[in-house]
Image 1: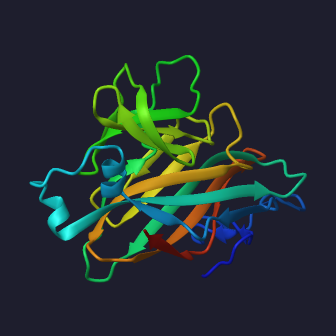
Image 2 (image 1 turned 90 degrees about the vertical axis):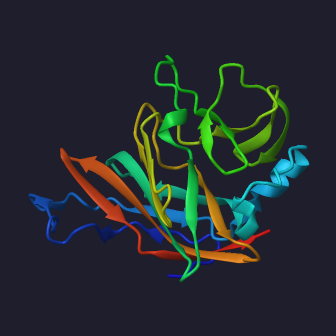
Amino acid sequence: MNVSSNVNIPIDQIFDDLLEGDVTLGSENIFSDKFFARPGNQPIALRLREIFNELGQPMPKELGLYEMFEVWLVPHRVSITRQPGSIAEVTSVGLQIEYDHGDSTCSILSLIPAPQFIHHGRIAFGGILQGNVNANGDISPAPEDFQFKKKQNLGILNIGLLASGEVGFSFNASVVTPLISAVGIGASCCEWNFGKHNEPIFGKDIETWTVLALPKKQSTLTYRLRYYICWRTCFVTTRRQTKWIDITCILT
């Protein structure tokens, strides 16, 4: 399914026909709530090597990864809304991505956001995730003295040089929840799930990033994605999802 800009895509596909049919309480269909997804259909990926160079941290020449591959930061964005008057309680929102790579190598090195960057012990989770990223595309939790000396603003993702001399990132999550799962490292497909915490998880822009290794000289990346949402109405939980959506990403 191809999409143009500013198109609302219904989140109305049944997850499993065998497990879920038309459920009613009396004459009222409890799945009458309507949710929509508006994907960011013109993403632009960023070359990790150039980010490091602009921060004054050129890639080590002996790094074997860059002899055959280039490492990219690839964004995925969506807004999820629902029709006015809905009474459903949204419990989680998810995003599935499958990269189209044919016979070529396509490997996910890291995922942002990821559960390991959330400080569960803090009284209030403010939605700020911080970590370090190295030349291999690996990311790790931030040190206690995390502080940028200089940085590049990539929207809600900032990457910059830390006082320690390492390269770090700060991710200002628009969906404020510590209940995040992210899987797919080492594969060509991945998935995020955001669980409801204190604030609603719809009506906001959701943004995720992959650190992706691709063959050199590749200029575009195509992938398909699907959004899903779980909600509860009248003590019954259900899941709906979009059809698969085709996206073309420019590799700058």
